[in-house]
Image (cartoon, rainbow, N blue to C red; front, top):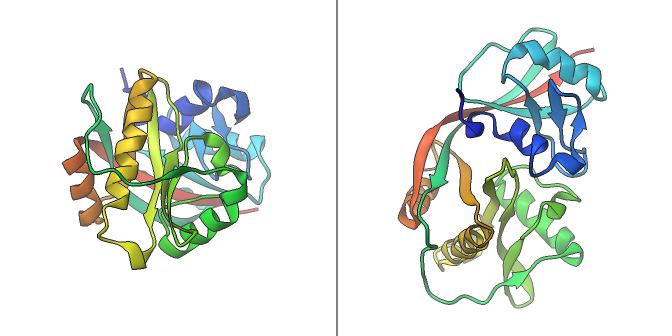
Length: 227
């Protein structure tokens, strides 16, 4: 039997995020203004066409799979991202120094979009914040670091959008924000996990320092149906 995290997007949209899911039983996806992610029931190419039938033909999607496969010619492969999927398997959150952070809301979205555009931690859109628990660090009233939640394949919650302005690296902001995210997830009796590019050595080391372990490799395919 496959692990729920082998197909995190699909199971997120069937469980924790089922109330916002679009699509069908074979292929589901997030609303466009929240995220470009889509889940395929059996994580195979057979359901790609089901995704096309269930959505607008001009949409670009990101799909995750633990096993590589060849994207068919009637889909355009825009990008392939090789990642580690990492899980936090400890009962308690790590501890660190106190850093002043703030919960982020709708009034912060413009700054969040600007920070994501600068640092490129992954997709973030105008309503991504509705996925919850975004926290940030401000300096001189400017947002300089943030993190939040994304997929929720119950009982797992993904930490995402972890980023720091280049001028503020080395201050421990990401570590402290991650500690807070882990603490919040554990408080709901759920399990933290995340995805990170497998060539991002510094980030992988940070996550391992916090207590995350590599569960598996994961591939993200960015695709669009060719009409």
